[in-house]
Structures are given as structure tokens and as C-alpha cells.
Length: 84
Image 1 (tube, rainbow, N blue to C red):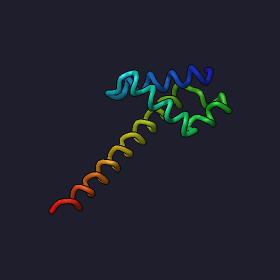
Image 2: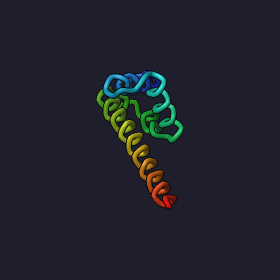
Image 3: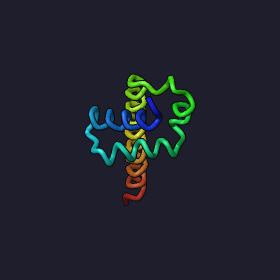
Image 4: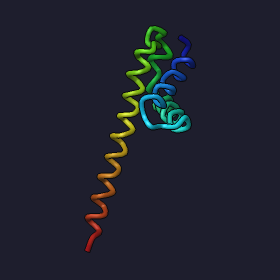
């Protein structure tokens, strides 16, 4: 599949597997592109499969969740530190 079709597939899978609307899924994919997550996929057509799209969708979602958890923990520490 083309690179663009692959990105569309990842976006669609994100909306199907997780409680993410289209805009949120698109943002995850665009942010991943900006971070060069998909560079290898652009260079290697064999990586652009539905199975790989599923793996990448899961990886992007998990990365997002881990980032959110880290931020929440950091905020919690700041609040604890600032308590009288």
C-alpha cells in the first residue's frame, strides 16, 4: 500500500481499537510523523501492511498513555511538594 494509505490505516485502527475520535487519532499520527516514527515505513514498502499498521497503532497509543501517566506523576509530586 502507499505510504499515505498506510498512515490512513493506522489512523483508522486507532479509532477502532481505542476510544479516540478522528481528530485525536490524526494528531497522534501527525505527531508520530513529526517525531520520524514512520521514516522506515516511507523507505520500505514491505513495512506498509495492515498487520504493521495494527502494531504501530498499539505502539502509538501506548506511548501516548505512558506520556500521560508520567505527566500525571510529575504533577502529583509538585502538588505534594507544595503542600504545607
